[in-house]
Each structure stands twice: as structure tokens, then as C-alpha cells.
Picture: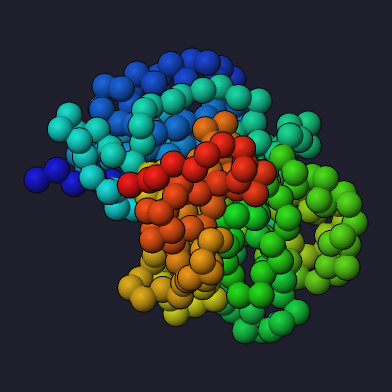
Length: 307
């Protein structure tokens, strides 16, 4: 029986020839029937791919065979399903690109990496170590969300600071605005989905005078795997594929609020305007009545019924 799986992974390490890595990864994934999105730069590799379990296992082995990638931390999760050709239903296509940054903060000149990862980043905390830090220092610990604001609408760490950013490129201006300067003398824990955004963010914060900066190693995914609904995380995790969100255990708290009727929901989907990238929290019942739109496009076109 076919078993759909999804991998989330990244590694910061110097790469002398990103284009050669792109061609290799593209051909490897295509040959295994995998779909997803892989970004490569001179600073490393960042990807999410899905497919049948045997193909995913072979991809992991082949990728780790490359010396620079031998220590990649692959995070596994359940896929929605496979089509008749064995391709993941969670990704429409395979995209493999070379970019200036493998996570787009718009600050490539600030990032420094070596074979051990990011230079000058925050102290990495495993999930249990994070709990121990909070147990020891209590409310003095600040959780700082390293994701886009909309992602936090359905799940976040308790009492987290959620910056008002629509995309990762807005973080540098947010930090430079001074609105978080009052946190510079407190222990700050950055977190994100799988660890890559908070790894860069923690370095940006340290460079701007934040004194005691940590990052959640492995991100929310690793924390949820360790503690489910019993830890400091609350709600559902937004993911950038067709699943849209996932829970780490049954009966997770529902933090999302439908923007139309205010009902509790974890359902998220794109604005009906094809060119808009905004994600909206809208319950299935309201989606069935009319395709939703963000505030900017609510009156831009006539709503159409949606399945």
C-alpha cells in the first residue's frame, strides 16, 4: 500500500556550486517522483518534498550521501495522499531554484555560515531545554514568533510576541524600528515552523543588541512531536502545502477565528484574488457560501460560489 510522506529540512553550509546542486536535486526528485519546493544558495539548502515512503527514504539516503549534507535534520510528517501516478497530492509540482537566500530576509550580506551552520546565531534549545528555561525563569522569557503574522492566527507559543509582518523580508525593518528594544535585556526565544527562519532571525537580533537570544532547535515541528498538546505550544501549525495546517495530537486548541462569522476554526485558504498571496482564516461553512477575499480585495471583484 502506498504511504504518503512529507519531508521538511534545511541546512546552512557553504556550497561552491549551487547550480550543480540544483541540477542534481532536480533530477533526483524527478527520478523518484517527488514533488515540492527546494531552494539552494551559496549558504545551503532548504526544502519541503512529498511522495511515497520508499521514494522519500531513498531521497534521504541519496541527499545525505553528499558530504556537505550528511548532517541534515529531516522532519517527517504524514501526507494527504498520492494520485494515480504516485505523486504527492500536497504539492502541485516540483520546483528547484537557486536563490540569493534560502530564506528571504532580504539581508544576504548579514548572514555568515560555515560547515557548522550560521555564525553568530542564538543558542539552540531542544524542546526539553526550552521547557527547563521557562520553568527556571518564568514569565521573564519572551517567545518571539519568527513567522508571518497570519501563521500565528491558528497556533503560537503562549504569550508570544507576534511581529506585524506579512512576509519574512519585513523582519529587518521591524527589528530596526525600535519597537522591540525593551526586550533586549530579557531572554528571548525565537521560533518558527522547522527552525530555518528563527536560525537567521536570532542572528539578526543578536547583531542588533539583543543580549540573551535562543532559538528553538528543530522549530515548532520538533516541539510538537515531543510534547503534543501538553507543552507550551497551543493550537495548530500552519504549513506551506495543500494541507494548510496540522495538529500534533487530537483535540488541539482551536485559536483561529473565522473572519466572516467569528466561529472558531483552523481552516485557512488563499484570498480569491489570484494575484494576492494573503492567507485567510475562514470556516468551511463560510467558504461554501462565497469565496473569501482579504480586506484589500473584498470589493475588487464579484464573489463566486465555492465548493
